[in-house]
Image (cartoon, rainbow, N blue to C red; front, side):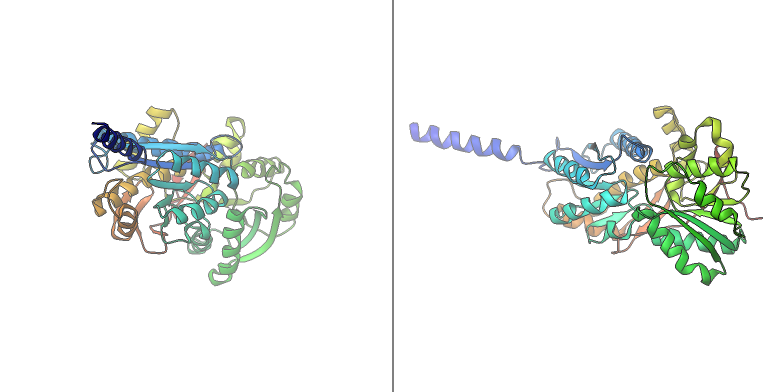
Length: 381
């Protein structure tokens, strides 16, 4: 009897031990998706938007029965745009049972996280990490355009629509996102008949005084000022340019999304006429109209591109899992869901997307123009 009891006890201990080792693919398992991004600090607008867009998608998917019958759980950690914090957050998410990673919201943090995700062999889909190295590994994909694509698309748009020929640039020399877009833009500008008449750099992300850069540009024959930077710094540049009486056209990349919130209601007129690249339009079609209404109802805010990126990332994971017909805990789950990424098409809020093995999305670029804080699709003159 003692021997039988000992065998039974050992079997029970083994069962309990394996029950705590993550999802098993059983009916009561959850599909855990983990994200990392700035939820506090100067760049929190990006992380909060991605998180809220992702939350809305998870809510919809669970209401419809989950992914392959498995309920989805979203976990999201704050990294304050710090690579070390991002890695620590990623490790915590793995300890919490993460099955698929949203990488990180900003590029520097995302590159650090991508190293860990590659080591673990799990699918990573960053909503908004735009630097090339964010998707350098075969398990990594993204929803947004990459920095080089934005530089090319910006030059192509300005030339094709005859917006301006003489361009000045203000960029953040200490920021990979800003450098990546700026360098590509400068390299392709001559192909599109654009002349770069001034390049003005800054290196402090907390910089609030851009008078020197603006005065230098005012002394040139620049028609347009290209701002491949984040909204935080752009808000200062636009208000100071308005105070100085500058009437240049301003143009930015997708990091400009959120500028209205950053600049505030008292200075919103400084954004009038600002154009920026974005694949997201709140009124683009019925899907985006519904997404916008649902987002406003849930968060009392208008969604930006980053919210659309987060929303689309969740639905992309769903599409890949359904194509692969897998649940967390299945044999070869990681390999199958990663392989499925190059076999799916997703009609998202940020466009219709497909992916090749390089991890970058194929989708159309668009430009919006701000007027009184409201973005509208650019209409060729």
